[in-house]
Image 1 (tube, rainbow, N blue to C red):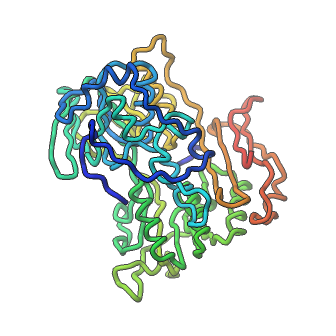
Image 2 (cartoon, one colour):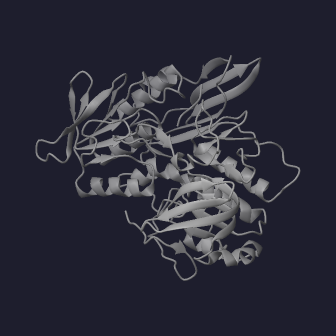
Length: 469
């Protein structure tokens, strides 16, 4: 059993003299860790200074994808004394950041003490490391190609074709390439959802999505919000958006919230906690389409269920899962994993081509698996940094799954959980804590005491899930 998971900058290669700053907004220390911004230009920066040229056509390490794992890989290369040239090709408009913030403090209601905004949650603040804003990449000689998509990989020629927002096409040669393109949110169009193109229908995967959502909320706070999906995005956004004063309804097809992770009794506690805070939950329910507003045919007005019921909705947020960004690799010969998806890599994170690696959500590691969670992104990135700096001896990559969430953090009674280990295979599970009291408590008045579940095999603990530790 496995857990699942705006302001546009002018497209440019970030080089000396091209720095801009975003507004600094106070961040939650428990979310971002200790923020440290380094302005010291060290050995790493001196060796990489030549990489700042915008017309450079070759990089020793070319990272394709600008998500969390890309930021941690750059940090790891610096810390391990890498002496070659490095570049990131990123479809986003910002340097890498800690993506989990988007469904947490980023959506905190307006009266919250903390509302996450960039540059406050750039990598690597999530683990207490340096905050890697634009200046950090400049100082360390790393080229950022933002608003830029990779369109093709040719491993034999060691060339990646890229296209920026103005459709300028360029070919970049590399010594070693790192695939870190991750995943995108499944959209209404991906599933052919009727009327999925209506206005006020949102997904949430990147900062641009988050800013569009917040702008819509702030311009005219909706009375009724429907969230489709009972996984991480559905659960965490419901916890945030109920604080805006809207009527929140979550609709999902499984029996319980977070069905792949939460055992039935713990799911029941979580669901009662949500209901106690005013969130309506419709489990085991599918939607058949969206309905236009009676006042504006271009804007959503409701969500239609399979039984014909229409839920009123001034805003709809889709948490339908993710879709891996692998289309650009179709002619590369890089192999995928047919069972769990993603790019197949060995325990050195190397693909079938010895000069091409994969990290983060997209990496399916031999004997380990594939996990769409920030901890796996960080772990694969930091391991690969050691591989690329030729550290020896280096044991094969291993990973113990780790998942977490922090819900209702803007309230006096937050609900948090952490999972570590495994619940796969032939194992026994036992609960701990006062589960009855947890179900019956008023979540607005009382923070729950510690409770959870433990998984055992052959007398050994192989995994645990703990709430409010």
